[in-house]
Length: 493
Image (cartoon, rainbow, N blue to C red):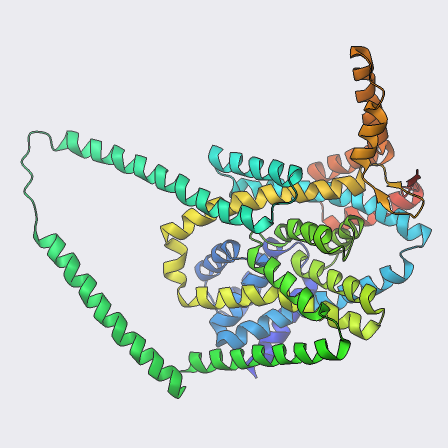
C-alpha cells in the first residue's frame, strides 16, 4: 500500500503548499529527508536543480521526480495526482463561485483591488527569479529583446522565441568556451616554450578502440533491451507499458466524450495545455505568456479573466501553473456548455494536459539524471531558455498592467476598448505645434492611467518589497481596499 501512502503524503503537501516550488523545499526536506529518510539532502537538491531545468510547474516536477525515484513511473503519476488534487478541488469551487457572482458589485471591486496587488506581486517574483536566470549581459539582452519583441509584435508564436533562445544559448556558450579554450592554449604554449613535444599516436588509436567497443556494447544493450521489452520481464518496462496503456485509455475516453458532446473542445483544450506544459520553462509564472497568447488566439477568456485567475492562483495552495490551468478549463467549458459536470471535466482536461508533458519528461530525465545535470550542451540550452522565460513573463505582465493600472474603457456593448490606442487617438488627434505635443503627452497619460489604482499600487509595492509577508495577506487586504475605494470604475465611451 506504499502507493496509497505516497498519494496521501503529497495530498497533504498540496494542501499546505503556498508559494510554489521554493516554498515546498522545507516541507519536502522534513517529510522525505528527516522523517522518512527516503532521500538525502544532496539528492533532494539535485531533484530541485533538474526540476528547474525541465518544462512545467516547478512544484509538480519535484513531486513527480520524488514519486518516480520511490516507486517508478506509477509512483510519479500517483505523487503528481496527490499533489495536484487539493488545488484542483479548491480552484474548481472558487471558479464556480466567481462565475456565479462575477457581476456582483462587491466582487468586481474586490477583484479590481486584487489585480493591482497581483501585478506588483508578479514583478517582485520576477525580480527574485531573474537573479538565477539572468547571470550576465548577453542573457539580460536576450530577455530584454524578447520582452520588447513579444509586446510589440504579437503575431510571432511563443515557441519561436523558445527555439531562438535555445540556439542563442548554444551559440553564446560555444563562443565563450572557445575563447576560454584559446586562452588556455596560449598559456600552455608559453609554458612549454623551447620544449620538444612528442606526438602520441596511441591516444587516437585508443579513442577509436573505445568508440568501437562502445558501439558494440550499445548494439548489444539495444538488442537486450528490445528482447526484455518484448517479453516484459523488466519492472520499469512493465511500468512504462502500463503507463502507455493508461494514456491510451484516456485518449479513447477523450474520443468518446468528444463524439458524445459533438464538439472538439475536449481535444482542443487538452492539446493547448499540453503545448503550454511542454514549452513553459521557469515554473508557474512561465505559463502566463502562453495563457496570454491563448486568450488572444482563441478568445476563450479575456485578459481581465486572466488577471482574475492570477489573483486566485496567488492566494490558493498548490502550483500556480496548475491553479491557472484548472481555472481556465472550468471557464472555457462553462462558457461552452454551461453545465457544472462538464465544467468539472474541462478543469480535468486542462490540468491533465498541463502536467502530462512534465511527467513524461521527468520520467526520462530520472533515467539519466547524473548525466543530464552535468551535460554542458544541456546547460548551454537552458542558459538561453531561462533568460527567454524571464523576457516572456515580462511581456505577459504587460497584459496584467493593462487591466490593473490602466483605465477600463467599454463601448456601448460593454466590450473592452484598447486603452492605449483610445488614449493616444484622443490626445494626439489635434496636435498642431510643439507646445501642443507636450500637452498631448500629459493628456495621454491622464487618459491612460487609473490614478486611484496607481496610488494604491505604489502603496502595495512599498509593502511587498519592504515587509515581504505572505502573498495571501496582501491579496486579502487588496480585496478590502478594492471594495472600500470602489476600484471597479469602467468608463463608457
